[in-house]
Image (cartoon, rainbow, N blue to C red; front, side):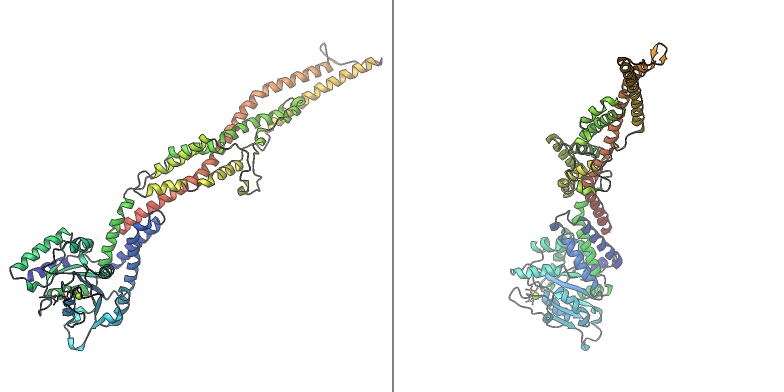
Length: 558
Ligand SMILES: Nc1nc2c(ncn2[C@@H]2O[C@H](COP(=O)(O)OP(=O)(O)OP(=O)(O)O)[C@@H](O)[C@H]2O)c(=O)[nH]1
Ligand SMILES: [Mg+2]
């Protein structure tokens, strides 16, 4: 048996100390992880992590001077007998009828005061709490001061309530002593349902083969070897394994020593929680397994989205109207004054769309449906739907489940607000059509001048005719060369007007195209901004959350 105790010492000695501050930082990282994935990952997958954060916070706030150790095992393995033998008192009933222990019993070494709150939290009823401190003990119990030993019900119980109680307590205690006996040490349920689950808690796990007195000197090493092999298969290699006898004096020296060491180290609670964090991190790892995509959503996808948004928002129609309106207005100012009025009767293409929309002091929100830009066609609508879908699909493609769905949902999350936002963006865009360019006015002025000249010439000529008709002395027209000046003014004015109009027309066409391009650029930018706010931002927010979650989980891992 000394050899086994020696092996156990070795296993404990090699353990790394858990720094309380490190543990707190790791728990904080788990908290950050939970905040980042909140609403993105189903709560059912986060239960363990939430439980850990809550439980660890409480345990760390409670007494760290105490080490809570549970004796767990199948019915009849001798938990209560060990409990009583360690306490050297008959505190927990030992029986022949199975199962015997129905609720946890606790024994505290040292004053009960400090441990009371801990036991309140663990949930041991006051009438099942005992104190192991008496003047009679002299010094031989001081090594266990700070131990809170729990005798648990059986975990393979026919009583469901026993199993639930055991499962609850195993989640709370600092260290577990698994008690097996020679008959049942190989039972499947012990290994698959319990021991295996503790493979991340190797440094707060101890296994005792109780009732060792029932085995002969040759059988005991064989059974211990067999049990060791099973423990290795459970992932519990290196876990201390002891043989104990509860019914004979000196049959649990090794166990007592191990407990004394655990109590003295005051590490069990930290190691337990550290193991819990390990388990939680391992369980959550697949939720953030890949790197965050660098440039999601990528440029191509964003460009396609902007194009589809522009189509659906009617940007081409408005750009057409700008071009038309430019020509219309330029014609109205620079055209031959005599036909200008007639031109003005034709509707202004921009005004027909009720553009430009807003007065500068009008809040953008009040512009809903202010414009008469044609509604998107079915094709434009479906192109926009596809483009938005593509943003979601491509941005989340490389992420593990359930993030792709979260990203797609985010891309579509503000779909209903999009049409109004697009309309507002169009209405709120400065199309650059407010002012009449100076050159229009100059050309317009020239047109007036030549027209006035023609009218003056006409008037002059008419006056000459009238005087002649009335038999009055005829007017003597000044001449330019052979041509009388009024005729020159009339014809020259008319010709110059036509000439100016002819020269101006291609310039207006060219300028109208420029105006169209400028408006198109501004409209596309406005529409792209809407896309950014209503489609890309929600997607980026989810990707951001993913990045934060991944970073947090990396910090939580050690
Ligand atoms: N020979 C021998 N008998 C033991 C030993 N430990 C316990 N027993 C006996 O085994 C029987 C069961 O012991 P308990 O201590 O009640 O077992 P338990 O694990 O608490 O059982 P439950 O409370 O039902 O879960 C009793 O009759 C004990 O006397 C031991 O080391 N050697
Ligand atoms: Mg019992």
